[in-house]
Amino acid sequence: MGKLDGKVALISGAAGGFGAELVRVFAREGAAVVAGDIVGESGEQLEREVHTAGGRAKYCHLDVTLEKDWGNAVQEAISRFGKLDILVNNAGIVPRNAPIEERTVEEWDRVMAVNARGVFLGTRFAIPAMREAGGGSIVNVSSVAAIGQSQIMEAAYAASKGAVRIFSKVTAAQHAKDAIRCNSVHPGPIDTGLLRGVLSNPEILNRRLGRIPLGRLGKIKEVVAGVLYLASDEASYTTGTELVIDGGALAQ
Ligand SMILES: NC(=O)c1ccc[n+]([C@@H]2O[C@H](COP(=O)([O-])OP(=O)(O)OC[C@H]3O[C@@H](n4cnc5c(N)ncnc54)[C@H](O)[C@@H]3O)[C@@H](O)[C@H]2O)c1
Image 1 (tube, rainbow, N blue to C red):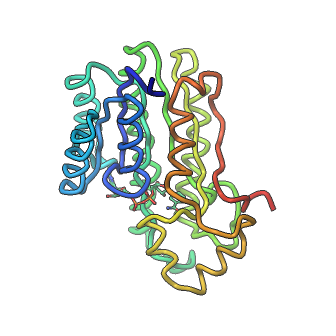
Image 2 (cartoon, helix red, strand yellow):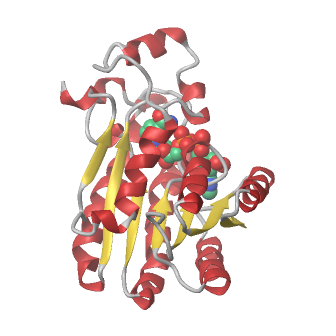
């Protein structure tokens, strides 16, 4: 029996990194998955891969900054698979590294639009569908940047992820009455495409590794396992909490 048998999930940023692996694992665990992203080619390839493995997935063009795309994505889940039980707000971007005084307003707004507005919009569109389904689970992918390590964090990214952290708690408190749970996941540095760009400088990489008690980058599957737990009914009494997956970095 799968951990998500009978569930319908919508995952944003589903074509790469955590998102693609979430689609594979959720489908393997029995969920029907709408995989939303702005990278159509990889998304459609992932859809075929899941079908070949005997699972159910549908790629859907979803720019998380746009209301109309969220409306379409939630509608896709309902019309194709009958309902929506799980939303993983995973899409996110990292801006070029820059001190606060050199950050442009355009860059700031773009990071906030994808990382924070995207989570708000996904939640806003998912709530009525989840209420209709009798409840649901929202998992928001934030970051350790939302909680600490401020000396090495980039301000716009950290602010956007901090917004996601507290937004998750307010969502949990306001929608417990609808049987909708909402939690945030806070990965430290994990070996994905997004991070390889940021840590391509060996000096920055070594500085980050030196701050991780387990002494290595995390693996995608180590984050996916946490998201799966929070999405599933195994976490039925867990809402408004934050799951840190960071090799011990924040524990110091
Ligand atoms: N990799 C890490 O170390 C790490 C650490 C902490 C948090 N995170 C967070 O995890 C999430 C996933 O990161 P990842 O490492 O898998 O990144 P990634 O770059 O490998 O994948 C991100 C995905 O989001 C998609 N995306 C970007 N803009 C989008 C938009 N406007 N609408 C829809 N999709 C969009 C991209 O196309 C891509 O498929 C992000 O929210 C990121 O901030 C990552």
